[in-house]
Length: 103
Image (cartoon, rainbow, N blue to C red; front, top):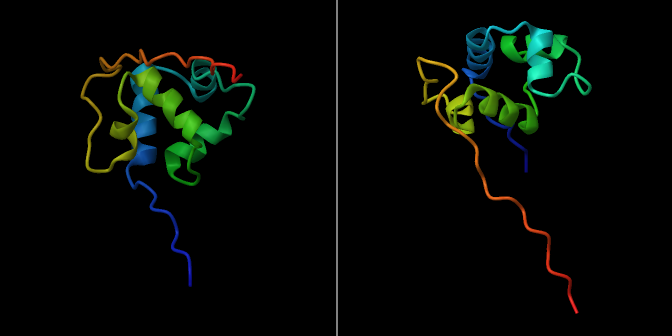
C-alpha cells in the first residue's frame, strides 16, 4: 500500500508574506517577533514565503498569534486573511492545569 503525500496549502507562502509585510517587519525582525530567532535562520522565512519549505506547526501558530488571526485562516486555501492585519483574534486559551497527583 503506497502512501500519499500530505496536502500542502497552495496559498500558505503568500499569506505568510502578507502577514510579515502587514506587520512591517524584515525577515530577521519577524523571527524575533515570533520568538524564533534562536531556533531558525532568517533565510527560512524566505523559504516559507516562497513555498520552498513548509513551516512547522509551532511557527504557524506564532504567525497566527502575531497576525491576530485564527490558524485556520492561514492554512485553509478556502479562507482569505482579513484585509486589515493584525486582526482582532486574541488568544486567551485556558491555562493547563497541573495533573492531580495519583494516590
